[in-house]
Image (cartoon, rainbow, N blue to C red; front, side):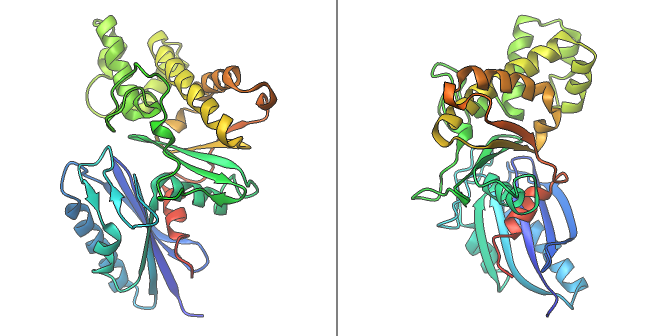
Length: 314
């Protein structure tokens, strides 16, 4: 058997993770770089090209079989990233871009779908046929398994749970709609919650310490554990809005579990306890007590990379 490898790429609104995976599903090497979504997409593609070629040159005994990519609004059927709300790229035919650089198979899917594939193959959802993967990062993505199959929809864009409406008169979302789940439950949404709280409590020391720069989830976690009331308000509100969205999705798909990955999922029960209570309150009577909320057990950055790599058959 030849030594072959595939490349898995997980493009996020803030960071992009890529990995080189051998034919046994083992990650040989992986790395994280800034996406720089405010720049043209060619900037990221060029940087990835350099990293990939460097690995190929350093490992002449390995044969590249293909590149699997997970990206926000990545269309599995067309190979095009379609107007991702947190990246200033418009429509990007990333499949063709990489095929023009590397003579191998290139397959694209939604980033949350990639994470769902990784969780199904390697993670806590191995034995589940019906689950919904939710990625909590700059935005909120979801990948839906039903009957053991990933749902793509007729146009390849199914599963955009981040853009279901939970408050018709709510916040404006980056997608252009109002009241989307993502505008409350994501790093972007939590930032909006903090800004709204500052308007009401402009002199609060804790709120002012987190209002600028990178949103530090660990800092909010610590304050929550120290019984800071503002931190508790941030997570209770976020959790309750998440619970409303989970109940809507559960009514349609009746999953065994929601599996959470990335970003603010690391807050764990600080958010999930509120989400579970709100979900249970809004579920159909026949569904109550049947659906679990589970945090992914895969290491940071690996679910999306492994899932994207599994798009390529070796």
